[in-house]
Image (cartoon, one colour):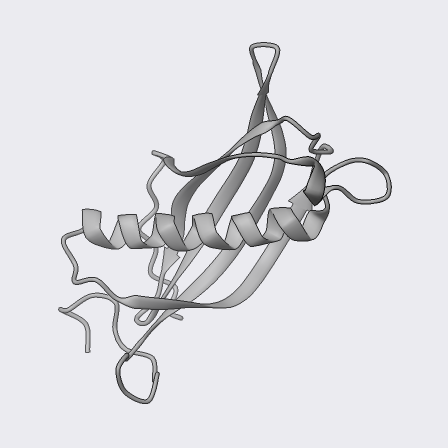
Length: 138
């Protein structure tokens, strides 16, 4: 991934989910692995949205790294959790997305978790080799 950056301060609501009892850990809060799965989904949805918003062709994206994940507050059963995304860095074949996870608790937005996830565009069908995200970059 190269160092070119096309940062946008506008966050995109990629996913919203209600946390259910089946997703709890022994402490009674939502298991971190469940949040990681939602973060990965939201990041990919947000990346596809950002690609589309730039007028670039649709690409198949695969997750290559969860670069950083910080759990700030516990997530409780019944929380309706929002996953907002924005691109942090664009590479030739990759995009790193920031995913912000929050819930509305009694009218106040509480930041629960945040993460950086990197996706690479791959050729499908084909050998799944990395391909440029932007058509103007070879």
